[in-house]
Image 1 (spheres, rainbow, N blue to C red):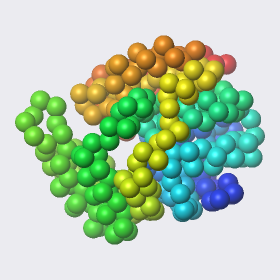
Image 2 (tube, helix red, strand yellow; image 1 turned 60 degrees about the horizontal axis):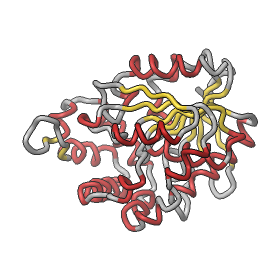
Image 3 (cartoon, rainbow, N blue to C red; image 1 turned 180 degrees about the vertical axis):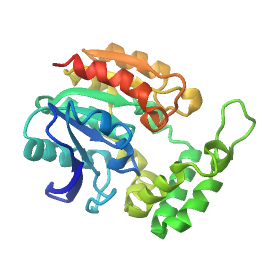
Image 4 (cartoon, helix red, strand yellow; image 1 turned 135 degrees about the vertical axis):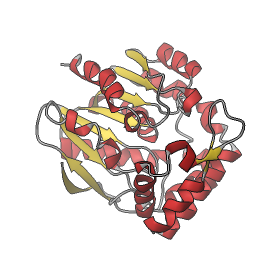
Length: 286
C-alpha cells in the first residue's frame, strides 16, 4: 500500500492505494479511526481488488475542516471516487464509514457498484437516542485527542470502563482487552492525529450532525447489491437484530451475515470470519 494525497476541494485527503489487482474496492473506516484499521484484511484482498483506503477529513493524515456533520464527509468521498478512482466502486464501510456509505449510495447510485455495511448504526431512532454514556465516552476521547500524546493517551484508555456481558457493572479496558493489547496503541495513535472538532460536533450538535441520516428514506434508494455484516449486540455490536430485519425489508438487493463471536470491531477481532463473509459477496459481483 502506498500513501498519497488527494485534494477533495475543502480538504486534502490522505489515502492508501494498493496495486491494480482487479476492480476497485473502497474501504471507509469508522469515527476516530484511520485507514490502517483495515490493515489486517488488506493483504488478503489486494491481489484480487484494487484497494483504496482514505482517511476521512479530520482523521489520520487528512486535513482538518470547519464542519464534521455526517453529510460533510460524503462529498469528500464522492469527489474521491469521481476524480481518483474514476469508475464505480464497491464500498466497504465500517461503523461510521458504513453510515456515510449508505448516504453516498442512496444519493449517488452511479458511483457505487455494491455496498458492504460493517456493523453500522441502521436505526434513526438509535442515533437520536444518544445516551449519556455515549456522550461521556465521546467527551473522554475528545479530551484525549486534545493531548496529542500517545504516551499520555494509552494509560487513560486502559482505565476506561467497558460494559461486559454477563458481568455486573463495567470493567477497566485493560481487563477486558488485556494489558498488552495492540488495541490501546492503535486507538491512541488514531486519537493523537484526530481533530478534536470531530467529536465536538458529535457531542455538541448531535441531532444536527445526523439530521440527513433518515434510513427509512435512504435505504430504499440504495439500488446496488448490499451485504449487511453484523456483529453480536451482546458483545458491543451496534447493528441490532430488529434493525437488520427492517433494513432487509427496505433494501431492494440485500443479504445478511451475522458473526456471533465478534462485537463492533469485526475485522479487528476476527479477520478470517469477516473475509469468509466478504469475499463470496465480492466474487458474486463479477
